[in-house]
Image (cartoon, rainbow, N blue to C red):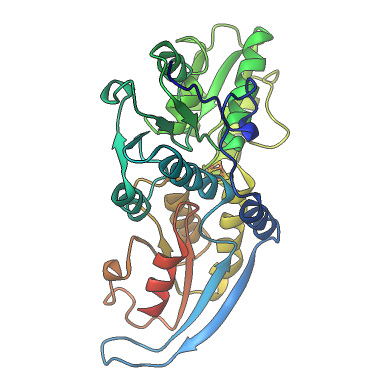
Length: 335
Ligand code: SF4
């Protein structure tokens, strides 16, 4: 009889038969660091060491880099490898960072797109972005060992959407089409119960079945300012629409965007360390541009820095998305 593994306690599901314990001390540090608010944590002038590289004043945004949800998801994969040995299957990239994914792959994690690609007799982990309800249901039907590494702040949005649905409301989800988190949240409810809105233009044309019975939820990693515009457009069209007190954008995303806004007036350019498929990293680039950085660029590693584009730049802001480890940030700083 295969072992069944329910969700980690933080996600709050049925009593676990076997529940991995995540190292709380590290997570507490992540929460604490995030709650310190936006600031410039380090400022230093790097002397010219190379004729092609100008001397720069680096402004390091804080908070930056790994958030608690990402940290937790990575630890869950590492614990699963320790507990069950390799291979452990992971549905979708556990977090949007190739460096992290490659590191876990080297330890024995196998990344797949769909559950069908996993054998019945090996454990499978669901990524931090969350999954449609049908996925754990199918894993349970196949009597697989599975661990849901969905970030608790994404699970909160799932619960919210379910509650609105139970109250007879149709849901509008503000998010990006095809992003795993959007797919996971929309998949909490039967097809047709959640309408996707990506832009202010979409908000002007979306056609709910009853404008008086509507609620909205949002993806957690959106731009705070862009989302506020979309929410305002929805509220103007549907005055009775129900929503969260604030958008569902998580505090890790919000704080990192605020930190970029705080340093932007002093930075001639901004580098965001992050992956091209990382929503929160791409939003940091958008926020930097809107806040006045003439040049804001996403880089995965130091080798991606376009030094020619930085010609003449003397003050450079640097930050990292919520799925990007310190190693990569330090590599960019050292460059
Ligand atoms: Fe959770 Fe926010 Fe981090 Fe996503 S960005 S994993 S929602 S804390």
